[in-house]
Image (tube, rainbow, N blue to C red; front, side):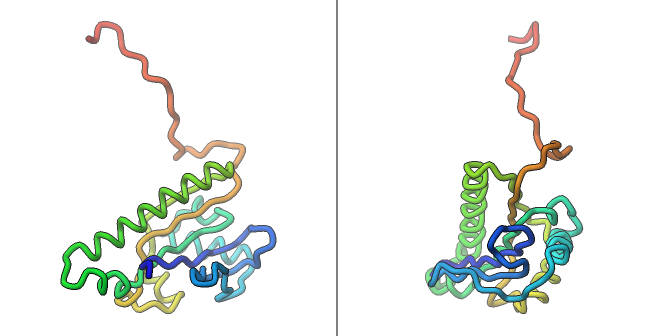
Length: 161
């Protein structure tokens, strides 16, 4: 009954065949949609994230889609049905960050995505099921990314009150 579906793009996960998968929530299993070489999966993930190669290098990327009728039947005629889907995807994204951090993995979430290419590749119509976001994770690199925030303790400037 949950509106969000997940299609993992696996390129470097031990014991999981590289390619496009679908998460079957009913059986709690991965279904192989299309086997691909790991390099092709990385290129596909980069294309899906609008050429952001650093996202394409993740060992697994998760395409989050929504099956819109699943939410709209719960909220018939309700203007909040669509925003609730986005909130569900946001909650999943936050959980993704928390789990990845606990496992010592680097993670990303983005909505800078190539929606039309993703929907065409996955065979989605964009009306009954459409893409809402992508997330991914993998082993952290030893060298920091220039995009990674650097947190430092706050030190008040002299003369400020």
